[in-house]
Amino acid sequence: MFVGLTMIAASIYQMLRGCIVFVATIMSIIFLNKRYYRHHWTALSIVVVGVAIVGASPLIYPDKNEETDDSNNPLLGLILVLSGQIFSGLTMV
Image (cartoon, rainbow, N blue to C red; front, side, top):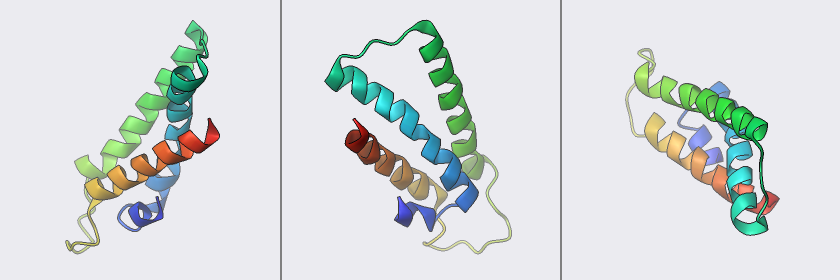
């Protein structure tokens, strides 16, 4: 996750950490056979929509002031942070 942090803004990194709720929910369904109700799924969908909007923001509105080089790749940064969240979710469950 911290390598991805070097490629995206810190505020986006912090918001993407909210994805851990989704990952832990899916893993608890798969591994623990836990059941969720409609209000749980509603709240989870709101979290996922919020994370998707924040995650798409550096791709839709790239920062024009920064130089374009290999260390500033927002797509790779997003992928690294989200894959790190998958491993963090596994440790939670």
